[in-house]
Length: 208
Image 1 (tube, rainbow, N blue to C red):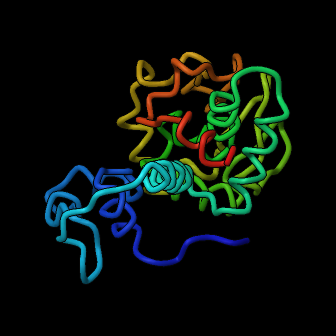
Image 2: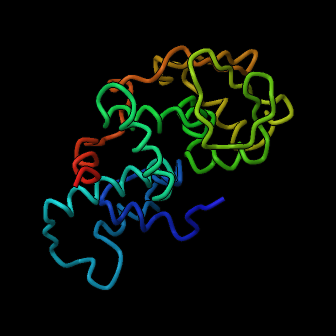
């Protein structure tokens, strides 16, 4: 399974914004973006001026890093979005939002998508009463994601359950704290996706 293994704080600094790749650490004074608000590298503090291509590329890189996917997989999502009916950019974001690791993060069960990905790989969740350990699996309307009872006492999950606010769960998902089950009520709509993304820039980049 391909994944990014270097410092994720460099990614936030490169995009000049908090991508919340380290969860709650990003809200503390230890956040690299707050401490060094310029791109990493020897020439990071130089004034940068991007071309149209550069702006489009940065937007694509930002989205890849937010959702934790690499280029080959991201391109696959784009091609699938392009083949679907509707607006390609919105289709792309819907596919990314439907990833199982993103669903778990959006439910508030983890503080970052990276942690959600790790917990899925370690078999802490069931999907429709079946074992699942594939973070990139796409959920569909009617699917039920269940946290295993034995996993409740795992520190990050335990802490997240104590702090969970159901009002922050997006409209296309629901979560029952008694049964520890989440239901996919619908496909995510563009207005449900609060991540600051200009998806049209990505479409323009890949359309060249």
